[in-house]
Length: 551
Image 1 (cartoon, rainbow, N blue to C red):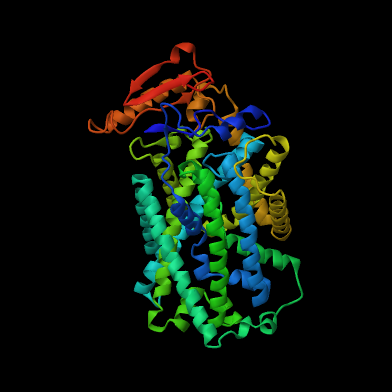
Image 2 (cartoon, helix red, strand yellow):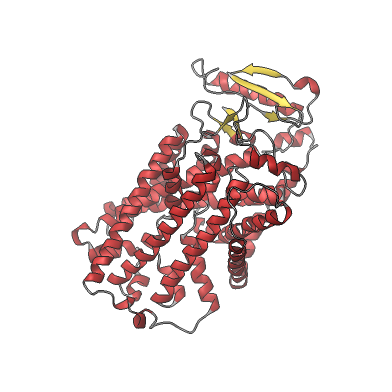
C-alpha cells in the first residue's frame, strides 16, 4: 500500500480565501506527480455514463414513484414535476461540471466546499456522509436487493428478516471484493447492470406504447390528467419536488471519481449531457407507461408499482419485473460503493479521516482501505432497526450541501475570475439552482423542523471532532495517540509510519513483502526536524518527506 496522491502532486489545498495562489495549481497541474502513486485513469465515457445512470436509477422508479403523484394531486402535475426535476438536475449537473474541471479533484462536493469555504465546512460535509448518509443508503439498497431476490422463494409470505440481512451483507461483501480487485472489473459490473436497468425501463416504456396504441390513455388526456387536481398548495408542490429530487439522487456521483476519468475535461461534461437527459426521458415515460395500465388510485395503493404493472401487462412474463428490481439494486450498491469509497479516500488524503484510508494498492491502483471502510460502515448499519429513520434525518443536510457547493461556484466567479475554466456556464444556471434548493430547504425547515433539526444536530457533532482532531496542531502525545485523524503529523508520526509499514509487510509473508505493499510515497511532516527529511527506498516505494513543499 502507498499513500494516494492527487494527480497534480502532493500539495494540500486549503481554503481559497486563505491561500488564493493554490487554486491555480489545482487547475493547471494535471501531470502525475513524480515518485507518487495515484488512482489510475481507467474510466472512459461509456463507464462514466454508466456511473451516473446506474447511481440515479435505483429501485425507486420500479418500486415507489407514487410519492410524486401523491403530493402532486393529479397525473398531469406529477408528470410536469418529473420533467421539471430532471431539468433542475441537469442545471445542477452542469454547475458541477464546471466545478469538476475547475477543481479537478476526486471527492465531489466535499472537495469543492473545502476548497471554497475552508476545512471546517468540508469536514462537516464529509462527517455526515461518513457517519450516516452513505452507509445507510448502501445498506438500504442492499436490503431491497435481498428482499426481491428472496421474495419468490417465500411467497406469499414475507422472507425472514435475518435471511434478508444476511443476503444484503453478502451482496456488500462480494461487490467490495470486486471493487478492491480491479477498477476495470467494477466499471464492467456497473456497465452490465446499468444496461440491465435500461433494458427493464425500455420494456416498460415499450409496453406503455403498446397500451396507448390499444387506446388505454384515459388518464393521459388533458381533461382527465388534471381532473383530480386540488387547490394549489405550495407545501405539497415543494414536497413533490423533494420526492422527485430524491429519485434523481446520484447525479453528482461522477464528480467523486474525477481523477480516474480519462480526459476529464471532455468526458465529464459529455457524460452529463448524455446521462441526465436520458434518465429524465426514462423517468417521465416510465410514469406515462404506468398510468396506461393503472389508475392513479391503483398506483398509489401498490407497494411495488413495476411488479403490479408487470402483472397487468406482461402476463406470464411478469417475473421479469422483480428480477429487474433486484438487478437494478445490485448495480446501485456497486455504484454507491465505488463512488463513496473515493469520497472517503479524498477525505483521508486531506487528513480528515484516518490516513490509512488514503492508501492505494500499488499494483491494482484501488483504494482498498477506503473500500473496506465503506463496506464495514454499511455492514454496521445492517444491524440497526432505525436505518430508514436515520436517512430521513440526514437527507435534508445532504440536499443542503448541494446548494452550498453550487453557491461556491458563484463565489469562485466573484473572487477568482482569472482562474482558467475549461467549461464556463451561464451565471443563470447556478443562480437558478441555488434559488430552487433554497426554496426546498426553507420548506423542509418549516414543514419538518424536528427532523431537520436532528439532521443538523448530527452534522454539528463534527465541529468538536474537527477542532480537536484536525485543527489543533500541537496536541499532547497521549491525546494524539487516541485520535483517529490528525491534519499535522509530527516527527513521532513519521516514525510510526515507518514502524507501521514494516508491520504491514512483515505480517504478509515473504511473497508479498517488497512487492505489493509499500509505505507512503509522499507525506508532509511540517513539524519534523530536518534530520527526518530524507529519501529511503522501502518495499519498492520511494518515501519522501519534505518541509511544506513539493518534492
